[in-house]
Length: 171
Image (tube, rainbow, N blue to C red; front, side, top):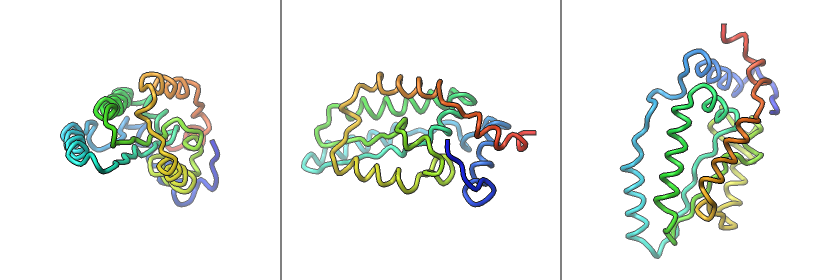
């Protein structure tokens, strides 16, 4: 995990989010998001427009954010997994839908590629553009294997440097 100039700009945002997660267990204002209706609308849109190609991008979270979710709010992590599974199951047989999914990619391990652990910049954006250009498709992968791989990476991911950096904020 590469961290530079931790007292300025986006690092204050990261500090604030880490503190909120560790102290309050709070990731978002509402723990659940009802995405099912939106997913059905997207599915219908793709079905009604088979001559169009759709690229759905799942915004890649940083590994630090996923690790905090995994360790400090596992029900939300499970909900995120269910969301990804639902996206996969909804579109896996759609010939005109591609899903771009980068969680677990090495770029997501470097917080310098993020504004605040969830909102990516620079190299992550470039990689997403590249994935669209080359026709990558998460739907061509085995969802269960892919997510199990991400969970193994999270088990091994050392978040200690980030926690040490902001440990004074937790008291």
